[in-house]
Length: 273
Picture (tube, rainbow, N blue to C red):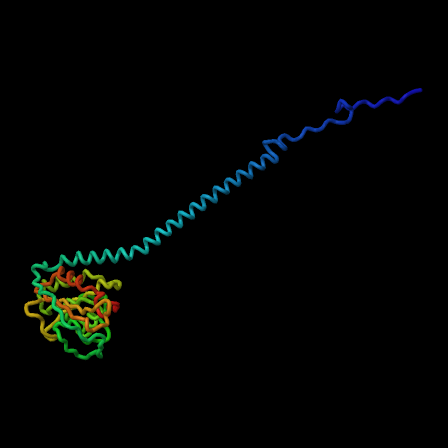
């Protein structure tokens, strides 16, 4: 009896079970690629994003800090300018005109003030107790804050300037025919006071006083005048006074001392312009 020939064993495996497995792609699951490589890439991206956000926060904090510093500087600058201008005014003013020793200033005199909030119609002529005046009835509107020196050609009426006295101005009345030296010194003194913006410390006016206005103290070229009040109760007329100081010559130091002794706050209406 004949037998069929046996099949030949497969050449792929020694056990004849089939072809050997194909080799896999290099690094499909190894450290160089696949899941391991993707994980490292994600870690790097996360680290970069964290660093980016940290840098962004740092820049934001730095910008906020700069804004705070700039804002503080902007708020402080006007205060600095006011203080600087006040010191500059006092320093510049004191050196103008005659020295205090040579100015021939009399002691400050005081008298009972009158006319608080007593307005009269424009054009009404008021007779004042003191010449030049330091208080009294006056016109409804004061002279502008921005002008500090007047000549005979542009001076407001006395009744207008008395209203300025009520608001806390120091007025340096000067003899209309005073020496050129004294008038120029007073013009320079007035120039040390600011005119651009309202500042209570700059309430000063120099104005001429002629024989048509009244009698000027004999032998004097300047009379400093103020209308004072109790700062705790400025409306109390019983405590209001007219104060004045007459000087033979114009002295910036005398003006500075007078204004320091009688500040704007001690007036019937210190908040008036």
